[in-house]
Image (cartoon, rainbow, N blue to C red; front, side, top):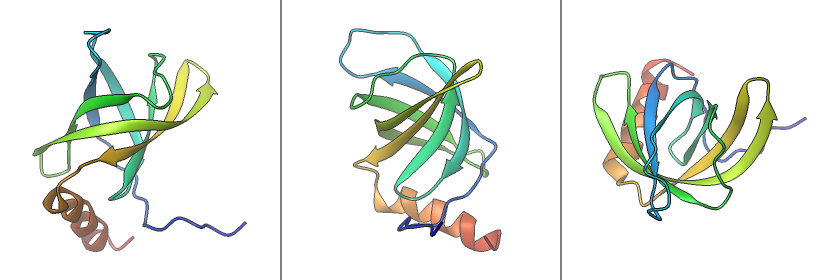
Length: 109
């Protein structure tokens, strides 16, 4: 099967904390990132999130810097012990998405 993704994907052993923006839920959930690109991320989480909803996120990257981002859930998959999600970045500054591209270049992926 041919990969039709527009941007390169990278596995990243990082964690982030997300909060729902509509004010209905003040809970924070820690998630494990499976892959990341400059346009979005794939991650696993035990919490049930809603497709189409936007969540605030604090992504800790390999340099230990924190990127503040907004994620819109576009894919949900039921997994053992939780859920697998796909999300796109909403309004991420070009400087932050460039950091992800630099990481991919340095790691030679």
